[in-house]
Image 1 (cartoon, helix red, strand yellow):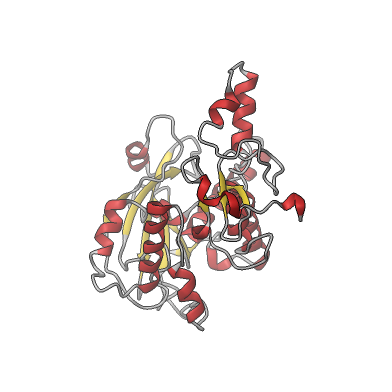
Image 2: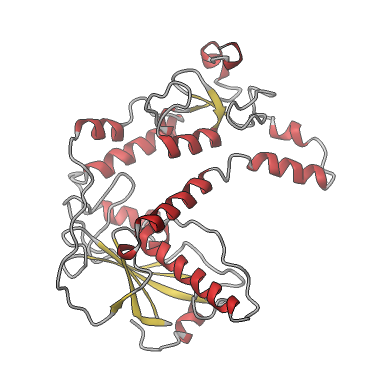
Length: 339
């Protein structure tokens, strides 16, 4: 870690115009892929020794960026034999964030920033209120960059990280066809009777740095619930986005807004049964129910079930409707008004 206590050099290097943060981090070390449980999931592989630097808002000087050093630690980590995700910053070099997931680390970063904002506002500083933000940890670790993912995948030519490759095949099928006929991830989950891997933390581990008071492992059940609730709210952020956009366009005097939005809409005037708003991007489930694609994502992320049949359902099974394919699905559409 940089010995500069204020991290001034790192902050200067990290500044990018007027931006306060960016997901794009610089990956320093790819690390080594492990094949034990906990070192991969449906979306990512977590190599031991992975190291990246991501510019993000400082919790000391709020108007500056500071490089957050993100690591995936193995045997020296708190949660071995599972990975330990760590973040440390040069402006607080003695405070290490350790968590069982990359999102756990970044949630702790957000909590620290918000706590500092709240404290300093209470002391009279003229600062904005803490932002209500959710964060995707793997992205801010740099694990979603295509070149990084490719280098990680090269270390698993035999596809031993089974869950990851099943997830990737589902994603590729979704991109190619707009749906996944039989999700491989779901098939794996049903065929496996094992539960999620939750190793116990090591006892008596020595370290030179004190662990952060915002560390993921120190959050109680209520705080975990708050984080999950914040994600639940954010799932619905995009549901009415098109309606808000349309209203802004109308307010500023733009014409033909609805006509432009419905240019490729095969079901103009169709009402979303959840939001009760006109659907702009309709999508159909295998059971014939139609909602906006954003509504489907929010509902399935939250429940994992069809809201009408109560059966398990994945977003991979949802097919977007267009003027090109509507004739294939028109007869399957369920009219809820007649039910």
